[in-house]
Length: 123
Image (cartoon, rainbow, N blue to C red; front, side, top):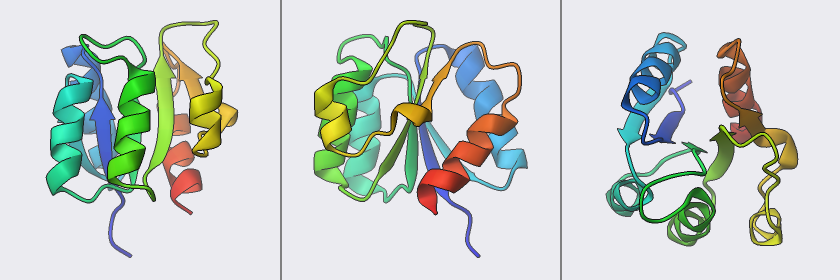
């Protein structure tokens, strides 16, 4: 079975690199972006199965990034990875299928939960 292609959108470079390396070791095909705008540019030219999106991004925030990404690739599945402990997906994200159970708070003590979440949302 081919690897799932995962887009990680996070402006923390060290976190982006470590998460990418971990997921590559878990046999995912990983693409990284440091802003919502960069992530959307990638989605315009590359089919992706799942996106891990930070909420606090420079420029366009994670909520708007997800809404726009969904318009580009309606089958794309989303996982939210945020440092905000009180974050809950707004109605606009719930309406496009973002599962509140796919919200993970930084720092994650075990990155394996993200790998499992990707496998789960991608089916």
